[in-house]
Image (cartoon, rainbow, N blue to C red; front, side):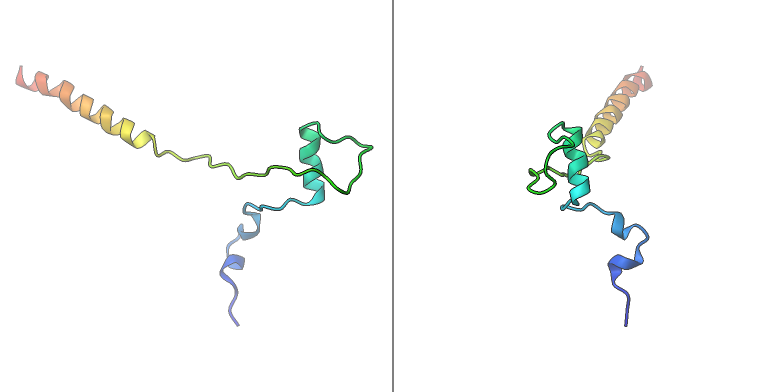
Amino acid sequence: MSIDRSLKIKGALSRHRNVLTRAERIERLKDEERWSEGDSLQGLPKVAHRKSHAGRKEKEAPAKEVATEAAVEAEAPKAEG
C-alpha cells in the first residue's frame, strides 16, 4: 500500500486550516477583546481566519522593465554623441 502524497511532505500538516479549534478561537477573541474569562466556552462568536498572501511580487516585474527601458534610452544619446 502506498503512502498518501500529503503525508510524504515534512510540513504537510502545518498548512493553512479553515477551521480553528476552540482554544484558537478563544485566543483570537481575546486579542480582539471580544471575550473575557467569565464568558461561556460554548456558543462562541464566529472568528474570521483568512490566509494572508504575503510574498507576492507581481507588481515589481513591470517596474523593472520600465527602469530597464529608461536606462537604455538614457544610454542611447551618450553613445551617439
